Length: 286
Image 1 (cartoon, rainbow, N blue to C red):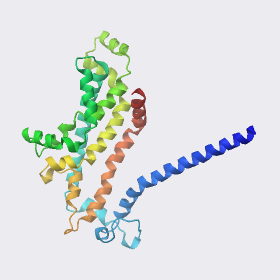
Image 2: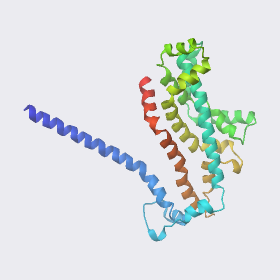
Image 3: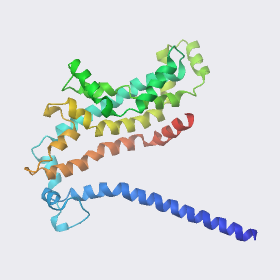
Image 4: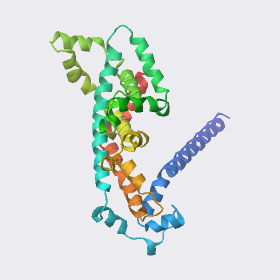
């Protein structure tokens, strides 16, 4: 009887494992399929998108490298938009990590008046979508004469609530003896942060660099409101201008969309070593 029960338990475990593998495989297909459809479409003429839409139909007689030739050798503003997005993403990520890590470190280590109230405000901000504060932010940027500038795109989100919360949760378990040792050695508070804390935060920095980099690279709605000059468009706005039923821009739109995935992929490859570690550590320490 015991052997039969053991065999039944093993059979159930194998069935559960197989179902779990099938579930993850299905999710992987759902995630990869749109990227594959876009990649296949990048080898087709732009007119096919208007006529047939995005599809999995592979007809080699209709496929060529003409779209990629257009991307690299054609007369267009794609690379200007691409460079604008690269600059915006890099500056946004660096400034957000710098400011948010300072704030998160302060919440985790120091005791000061109003600390709990301020942290509750940070938590409340996490629950407020951008659409709710969009009009006040717009009026604020307009009042500061920052419209049509990259400062208006970057500045409102430098102290990012979710990034502050993550850094605070990551640093909250740091032993006070480590900080006291730094003070005994004569290090300033800034020196303690840069020499002792920052090396410990590499996994957290990597995780937040990927998430904030994706948000900055894919940001569309806020730049649409504050950027007015076409030469300052990021890639998201530039590609949107190609959606024109009266022009033949869909070839560039499709291949440009494919190429726009590459920076995010490279960002993940560069920081993947610490990404999972940072996310898990932040969750466990929280």
